[in-house]
Image (tube, rainbow, N blue to C red; front, side):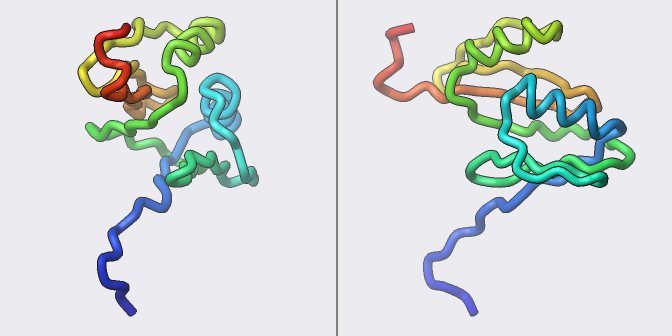
Length: 123
């Protein structure tokens, strides 16, 4: 059954990782993503609009970016530095302040805080 006007929504992203404990530490502790399920085979981070599944397996990084909005990119940047990660300073664009980073398995992340129209020109 199809609902009129219904739009597709992203339910989850599934990434295979070489070391599940390392991935859990990176995404859960360093990035602060809420881990809502954890098994011997996978963990699940709740990203509000979709789930991020990290499963034990063979990582296959691609040219795809995972763009993930966070409440405060500058705070996340400090957390990443405190965790000993080598990460470039956040960059400003007209639409967002962001960091590009590869996770421990080589997946490309675009971690960002959107810039609202009200914020423009005040940074």
